[in-house]
Length: 394
Image (cartoon, rainbow, N blue to C red; front, top):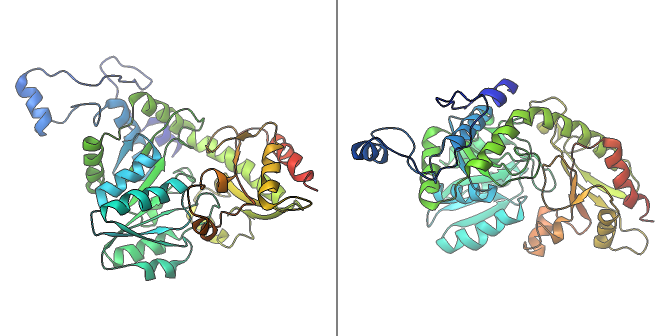
């Protein structure tokens, strides 16, 4: 995996560059009118226009596909751009999809507010309830979609079981692998048809640029490619180059993230002012054994966790959570995650504030919940920073 992360997918030009080049060009020059026509009509393979064919973007796509074990990847301008591409490529008016309740708020907004306008209906189920997935299937179900681990509680879905449910009904199963990355989990190996990424997160790893991607079979990715080509949800060459560099260190960074996260989860689990820790690395987590099975890197469960603080003293649930967040001096208060810097946010009032209160409750996003993205600082410093607020709650 580490060799693939460093070497796969590079296109070396006649200049013989060792590092991947950034091709900042919108268009390409042909030898003749006939040569241009052959490129446009597909008689020749090659670059046409950087909205959908760019050597730097292609290098990123090839490397990510190799790491996920897929035949092909298609890059997009953002993670949400990848999910939109999924919808446009595989769903049409009158279709039905089944999605997990435990999703990023913007994904829920996209499905409800936009796909609904075009006649696509959605049924939401708990990601960890296999029976609910099976019962939600309708004759017109075309796609099942989940995050595992999920945002923000890190719930684990049974990829193999849900894949079998989807395939028994002729539907596709799509897994958002943003939190685990191919350094920890490869959903295609458990039967998923497509893997989706917000490359903005761990693939970059330093919070610099936006991007997304889909990975799967060549046939399915061709359908996604057509959407990107026509719709323009394209990744820029510079961003692709940043992601290529991110992939080179992804395995090393994820190991360090996970090592820190395991220690912090144990600290939180033992703190008297923490009511509950949502992290599959804890042996008490109901899906711990499944996480061990699906996460091939030993003792690595990702570095995103949710924890609920106690409303002690004069605090409400929300004010207790805000107190812990506001008491940090090093940890960054921001909605981004997957960064070298530890970040913290209050999902109910940030990432999920557009989701209805009822839907938040069903997804487990309570007023006392804090989402933590564990970074690469010294773990003792992260613990001390979190302890400031937790210790002073009362």
